[in-house]
Image 1 (cartoon, helix red, strand yellow):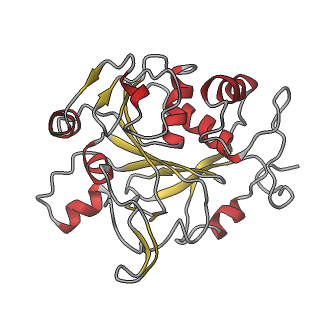
Image 2: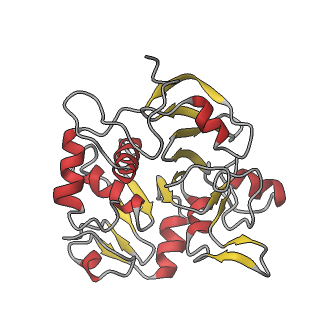
Image 3: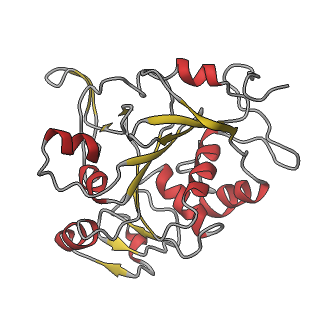
Length: 273
């Protein structure tokens, strides 16, 4: 059976390969995101699945990875999974706690962040993000938290990873309802004087697969998860999705990754669903 064309029953995730237990979508996203971080030194990570992925990387593939939070905490080693960027546990064992002007003016704009790790409600084909409103700005269907530091993270990180819990045409869109965080390439086209030094979004991890940016910055399909077909991903994407050569099937979470996530990192299932 070809894993690129086989389809699982609707609403389920398959049991993974030999010796590995069944897993949830959030466990898959955390494990795949963690592997993408291999070799990364400094990560500016948002709360939620990005935090979960970095915590897993610290305990497995990348023990020296340094996590930077928007609240100014650098080199965080919290004794428990933080629930907000202002969680008091972040201060415990941190390498440094900086003021906001120093964090954004020197660390981020100074080019010290290897990967900015973000989430969003919508993403377009060149990696611009919407985390502000769904629908019309003046009468939105949903009003979202807004940028926070995401626009600065997008502009100044060497590259940006995005994790999306839901891959469908309302999230992966041809045109954003509102552009909260423009990709550096788009920002420079709008204004050549915009100080956007990073590459923008290079990797997107969704519940269907992994997208990678090509040489033009367009997001293309690089791998599909077990039981997902290429046709499913194309149908769930709001732009004509290109498929990269060498398309692969994403390796399933391992028993070690699932054990760490369930029993050491997030036993209370704060972010695991």
